[in-house]
Image (cartoon, rainbow, N blue to C red; front, side, top):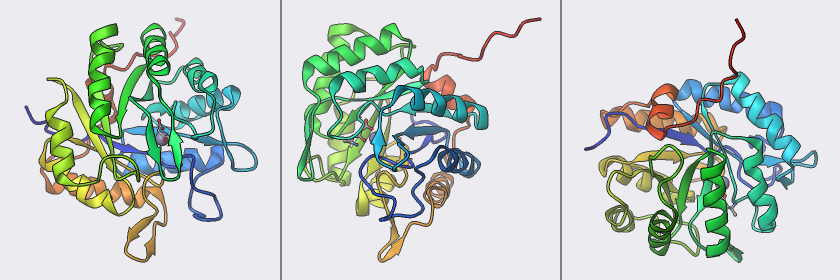
Length: 282
Ligand code: KMH
Ligand code: ZN
């Protein structure tokens, strides 16, 4: 059955873009928190987080990740998803350790992919270890699928190790990466047809594929991911002024499709996020 509302995920920062290339990119904790607040107000219910160090370089520093999760929980009600993809140079051990920051959700890429001139490495033993840690640490994984073969590897994870924490399988099609599947309606339909029954999914189109992928996803019953991790140009020759305008546009598309933005509460219910609110003493 097609969903009646649209989960909008914002990926505000990523690991690839330098601050001086895109001054609106949130790289400090304060910038990230105010971006998240603005994006929640514009209709986003999930934030996919990469963080930077004091020099605005990507980092997986555990202390910073913990502080980031706490600050986002304090300032918003969004589902907080930490990237375990990090940057292409991050060692596997650091990527596994991300779960110790106790996010609501984490990304889990289902295979190695060429990533422009680099390689984003996700060999089977790493994926299998990360998946089992999500189950043990009660973190909801979002399966990131950059290619059709990644859908097959997601099935292999589920068949080998069972359901994810909470029981809902949720995937994100990351389309248009140079080296991955193209950001076209045809590729989207091929990937969606291969997903397991009952799987919820969103789609992300990198760069100029952002709009075609969003429109295809809405028409195929999917959810949306947008943000400056994926897209730095709002229209031809017009740089993005901030993540919130990408979220606002996604929300407008969702309303036009008669599937308005999903609330953060409904997103938590759909994804079966663990309630991590501290028990109140009476
Ligand atoms: N930065 C890319 C190498 C993820 O967040 O899990 C990987 C990435 C995927 O962004
Ligand atoms: Zn990411």
